[in-house]
Image (cartoon, rainbow, N blue to C red; front, side):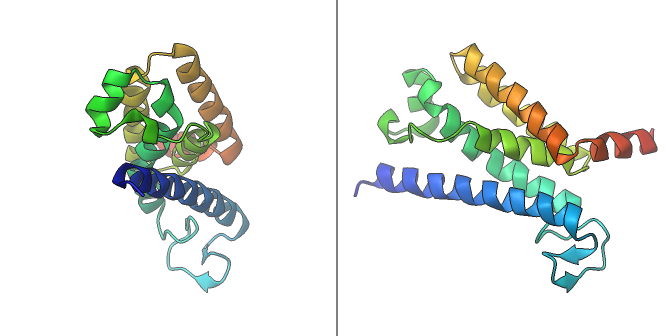
Length: 165
């Protein structure tokens, strides 16, 4: 197996793992407040799955979101841009990585209620979506992210920002 194919498979597995962990964290937040994954008591009231604080969860989404968004949009980028970003043959990027995976990650990061996390996630999304040549796919990703953020409870972020103002 070539190194680029191995890297592609690893990134694909990582992207799907982070999506599943984000989904689990959102469900755990709303179904077991103050508990770590329904089992362990936590000293903090806003536990997001295995993350003790909302800032930790948002930070993890910030670090992993660009991988998932790149995998979902990689085939839509111009070849020269893709070569410049990866340094590899553009054929290693999976062609069937679903667009809703990075959209969910962005929505969950927005719903976490962290104040700096959503700013960084939106900046990452703007940079990566600005690199692709198909604007329709970028707009679809943004719309899907907003729907999923509303579904995941972005009101938490709005409430926290309003409380500090």
